[in-house]
Amino acid sequence: MDLPITSQNANAPAIVSENRVSETTLRRRGAVLAGEALADWPGLRSSGPMSENRGLAVSGLPGTLVLLDGLRLAPAAAGQVDLSLVPLAVLDGARMSAGAAGAAHGAGALSGVIDLQLAAAGGGGRVLAAAGGQAGGQPGRGIGVVDLRLGSDFGWLSGGFTHGGALPGIGAAGQRRWHLAGRFQQAVGDVQLWGRGLFARRREGGARADWHDVAAGISGGTRWQWRLAAARGGQDEGAVSSRLGQAQAAVSGATGLTLPGAAEPISVAAGAQWRRLRLGPAAVRAREIFGEVAVPILQDRPAAENLVATLGVRQAWLAGTAKVSGRSETLWQAGGRWEAFPGIALRGQVARGIDDFATVSGMSRSAGLIATPAFVPGFALTLDRRWQSQGAARVQAVDVSASWRGRVGADAQLALTAQAVHHDRADFTPLPVPRFASLVRATLETGPWAVSAGWRHRSAPAGGIDVSVERQIGERLRVIASVSNAGDARPAGRQALLQVVAGF
Image (cartoon, rainbow, N blue to C red; front, side, top):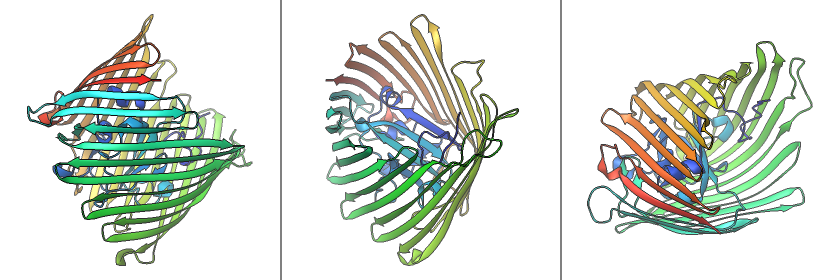
């Protein structure tokens, strides 16, 4: 049964607008930079001016939190995570959602969340090499990528170099990036030890930016799952720097309490988090405790296949700069999911969030429909209406996502995806957003071949067309040729790329 446990379970069904992207989709997109690939989701747009277009924001609102496997990544001094420094080669996917998530993730999760997934341990070694070019006919428009990963069942170590690539809305010609990343995990009895480290450097002319993230943790449990984690990261860009230190503990699981009309027990989660964030001269320390509960009310009943209510509360104490000295904030969310009949469900949530320094608070509401009818195998539809407010800013939007996957021959499968966001209100948002944005993609897989085509629409004069052809050669060699952003009105983003992925 589809029971949303709590936000501490990454596989729980969403009760807000959400999109998940796999490693295969990221690779076939023909992107070089993480921000370029993730910006395909229509609900996201670049989070800064054209010259500093390295982050992403939900519907032009500030406060989009970026995580890596559930832990925060250090932002740049401007307050946004510089996604041009996060190496795309080491990512295994991403999960993006719109709406305040203060109860689940704390201060800073004001407008939405981007949760990146690091490549899992195991699978041996791999070499990724790519070459291509950007439109513009100017020196430095070439694209080059190389990443070498050495791995075993206990983890991997990766290092690589990237030249060029397209940022959301602009090119990145002439930029050079080096990265070193690693991950390990080791089971000791019933306890799992893990750690990760990422280091990246970007050079553009005489300017340089350095970014790092190091984390370690321990987890275990069966019925009751627990985990402890700590991380430290930061970015240095000239005389400006940022630093983030964090530690958190959480426990979650199913209780022995089951309501009379339900078939599954009530689930709970609780935990605490400590953080210290410094952005340039400003700094804030946060201490937070939280609790969540998911209550199955009715299950396996007429017109109530699964009715679940969720509630989360987080208390945050913030101190540091004069504006937040000794400040206490209560963050909360309440929602639910009602599957009236198998494959047809309604969902909704109302939540409160604040930014990292508690200078801006916001509310978000959402109500939606999920349809996965059994009489149309492989089809899924979500339709959500959301309202978000932050200070004077107001956003009203409709998010639509539809997908279908099925056989179209004896040895061929076709996958169709369509996503769209319509902003019928976007008043006083710090960043402008298009009234309508969409993404349509089709992928045909037959034998060792896969052909993918996508079209993005962001505003009346601009769009983007992507085409890729993939060939699997044996078990360990994959070749992908792609053309990206072909229909973009800004030629700096148009690029062609040839990728070779070889495992060993």
